[in-house]
Structures are given as C-alpha cells and as structure tokens.
Amino acid sequence: MSRGSMLIRGAEMVLSDRIVAGDLRIVAGKIESIAIGGGLVPNGDEMLVEGEGLHLMPGAIDPQVHFREPGNPEKETIGSGSRAAAAGGVTSFFDMPNNNPAATSLAAMQSKLDSAAATSVTNYG
Image 1 (cartoon, one colour):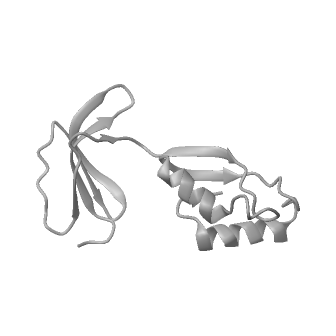
Image 2: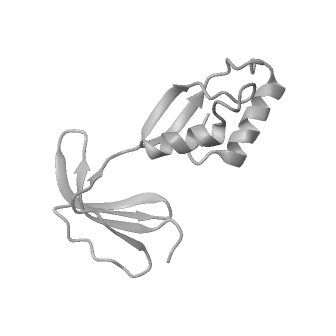
C-alpha cells in the first residue's frame, strides 16, 4: 500500500454549495481527483474506504484553543487536546499562550512547539 494514498468510494461529499455522492482519491497525502457520481477504480496500491452512508467534508480549523500545557497538564495536554480535536473533525488548531506560566517568551513558545511536534496528531500553531 502506498503511504498516504486512499480511495474513498461512494461517500456523500459536502461541497461549498451542495452535497453530492461520489469518490475521492488521495495520493501522497493530497487530493488527486474527485468523481461526482462515482466511477473511480481502485488501483490496488491504495487504502480503500467504502463511504456509502458516510459524509466526507473538509477538516475544521480551530483558531483559538486553550490547552493547559504547560501549567495544568492534568486538565489537558497538547497531545490529549489534539486527539480530542481530531475525533471531532478538527485538523488544525492554534493554541493561545495564556497558560500559567504564560508563554510570552521565545523559549516558552519554542517549548510549546516542541511539545506539539512530539505529541500532536493534528496540524498546530
């Protein structure tokens, strides 16, 4: 199986102006083709997802999250928060620096970025 390649077949695709049934092919992590009404043929080197009865839509971006790392990781960490976000369809987040201690220095921001790089399952900023 080719890494980052998949065919989602027969899903209800949520477009900007309508919802239509169809197929979507991803190659190397990027959308390569969309076939409204279906018709894409599996190539054998990709993951096949049968999407009938499922909705396919773009991932959400959450521009203001308040993960509690550093300071109160028992409440939520970047890792646990990103996993919860991904479960809800969020693919990217921007964490606010209002922790205790506040991330107001370059070193503190770099520490948060390092933690996100090591533990986040989504895109981050």
